[in-house]
Length: 326
Image (cartoon, helix red, strand yellow):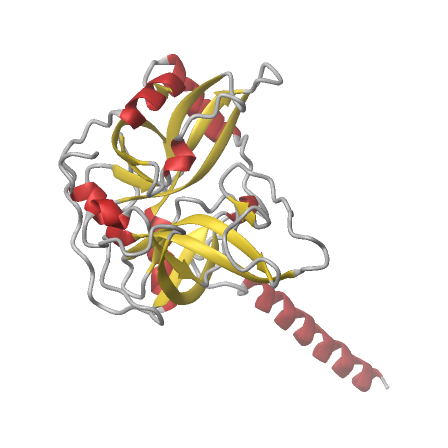
């Protein structure tokens, strides 16, 4: 009896030890474990942002608003496109090194406290040119009394935005200069097709570091813009691409990558369509950065498909290469 009991306890110990060991080895060495959600008031970020504000190193909301209508148009040296196919794990690691969060450090109109609000972005040059959505950096006087534009790089450093280089509201794209950025720059690949792989690392609804995969679904023109020339800056303003990666508010401006680690577009809008609503219009649930989810589609017409619209890399590339923006 003693021998049997001893044997049973030995087997149980091995099973428990094995379970504990498997828990310890639940992810590979060096793989980051994310918090459930990002804290927009992370004291490390807040303290860095406040220090930059006090030192006068940040652009104010008024300066940004003025610069969006008259960007500096400095020359931007884009990095070359990568051509070596990689596996999804490599793309995820590459995206993590390249991530940029960009947004506002602002004084709330409803209280006397400072807040942080940010979306996605991505460096496109070695000297800190960062692309994002126009709507992510356009000041909103309804949501802040006083605001300063900042960026957070892949090493969690808060960096000052020093200039608006390009801005195109119709395209929903802007390129800014960020000082001291440590994030790796990404190339813009405008030679892609439906069926090509697509990957996205972003913070949908604040869910930190969410990586997803999908494909390019289609390229399309914005409503009423059919027949433009996508080879020109004017025509590319209305060019969009649907991809099947996952995103939500908080993902705007984040780069969608191909299997080589190049940018094929950046997150812009979500469209929720029903059988009674087959295209953009007043009955559609459309979400952008800073907007709460809203449903205007009748309950008798449930959502049947959600479309993810990205600004195509073609437009961003032409915008960056343009010496003068209209």
